[in-house]
Length: 121
Image 1 (cartoon, one colour):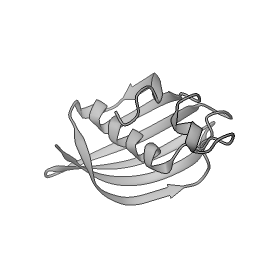
Image 2 (spheres, helix red, strand yellow; image 1 turned 135 degrees about the vertical axis):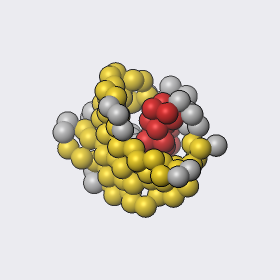
Image 3 (cartoon, rainbow, N blue to C red; image 1 turned 45 degrees about the vertical axis):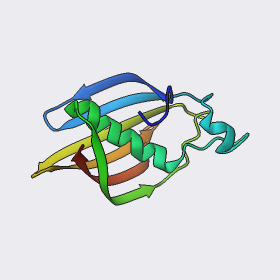
Image 4 (spheres, helix red, strand yellow; image 1 turned 30 degrees about the horizontal axis):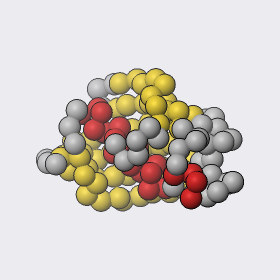
């Protein structure tokens, strides 16, 4: 886990090749003291890391991000305004890698779309 006690799992739904999770972001986490004081914004790299951790939970193994093919940030994730985030991940296994296509949503609004290539450690 990238950041200790940054999120907690509220719910998850597993399918054959997908995982949908609702996470609660800890709005009082120390990362927001510097990013940004009085105006907290969840760093984009942290949101990407959350998707990697979703894959690790789904497959019960560790991965590294080999490539980020797309990361389109569509809205600011401010945990003081809304501390719940839904992550939708679809996995495609190819040879020795996993292709992850994901969306992050808050209140049914897409805040991030991404495509990652993950390799097992």
